[in-house]
Image 1 (cartoon, rainbow, N blue to C red):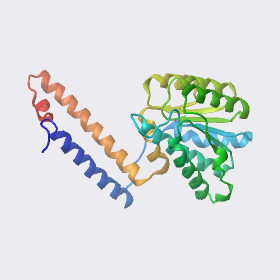
Image 2: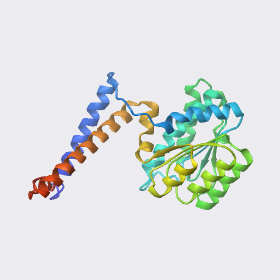
Image 3: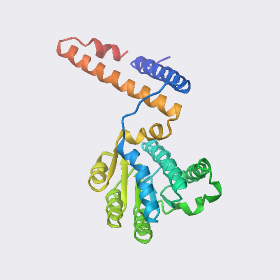
Image 4: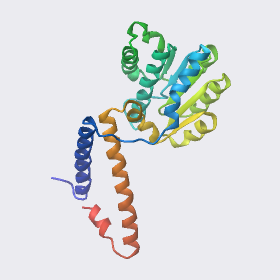
Length: 259
């Protein structure tokens, strides 16, 4: 039995799921979904190309990553970006350094790295034990270790996508000082200004979550993203109509959504 007041939530969940399945099926059959350009994601190839020209590595971090809790989806978004960065580094033969905070992501990062080199036809050149470096699970020990990598190895590009906290500005300033081009993104509101000030390209909020679909054009990612955006538009329309009707003295929309 559905709890009172949750019926419309249940209907919305089922409707979104059905629409997502339909969208994914249509995309697999050739239906195309257009994306607005996201400069930060378009700049990944520029960043890796710059590293290739300078003969210096690319540095990547997904912040204080975790596959559980509130920011798990943002960690997954960061891993999607790492997969693309690894592929570009394999193509241009550029060393990549993934500074890892939480051990949970290591197996996934290894697989993404190896698959990237396989996709570029260079599986024998993959060196995950050198590229993927576990540093610490203590926030500021991790931050200090990343600073050390920046100062010693002086990467030409620094790419940061994931959940960041007080270390965000520490990283951004350090890599700015060593002359790295920076692509940074997070959905954590209080850290976005630091990335916007110091970074060359910034991914803000949901641009991070769209990265997987934008970069890979995977039908599952793309279809899900399309339906999520559709749902947001419907929610906005309902909100506006509800506000107008409430102002006019009727709460029909409010009562309907409370079912």
